[in-house]
Length: 207
Ligand SMILES: N[C@@H](CCC(=O)N[C@@H](CS)C(=O)NCC(=O)O)C(=O)O
Image (tube, rainbow, N blue to C red; front, side):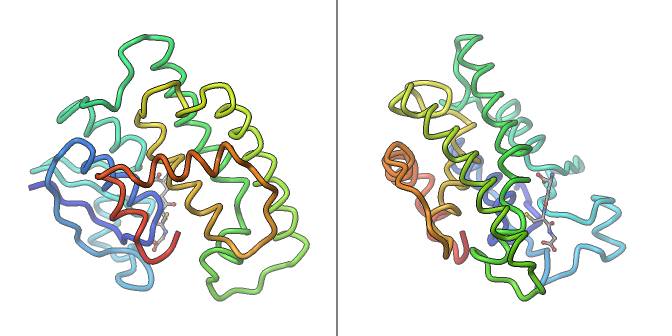
């Protein structure tokens, strides 16, 4: 059986688990990641020299980086309904999938640890406020995209991009800060989190 090394409080771990659930692939979670089990341990670094979760073990095959793992699962066990057949729509899914991992994921730091996960730390209030502003700007970009599709990131159908974006929206609503009204994103949140394969991942302890 597939083994996912990580902690379910990590968005990148849940991105992998939700993908596996969408594809109907069974897996076991081996808990790694602070504060449970420090991935800086030599046996974990031997699997991922970055000392980060998630790591996938599929038999003897070991893979790190959540985006690479999502693509691997789709290629090996899918694609299910996760990959649009039309080339342009598929490219659009890739675009939003990459945008989440780069632009959005960097904008929300340090707002996420300070205001969403509320991790202990000496946060500079100005930096947190600047991060909220950057994060809000990115969410407005996604709001505009959803206004075009009225459904999902790549178009009408749910795709792999909506896994990481859906979890990101979950974070947005889990934070302790003032948010502008973004009605498209609010409707999208209800749409994605009610998917049968999604429910458990939205119920996880921290957004
Ligand atoms: N690019 C990596 C980033 C992984 C990452 O940032 N992992 C974080 C959790 S989301 C981590 O391992 N933090 C250390 C820990 O949990 O101990 C990926 O997408 O897999």
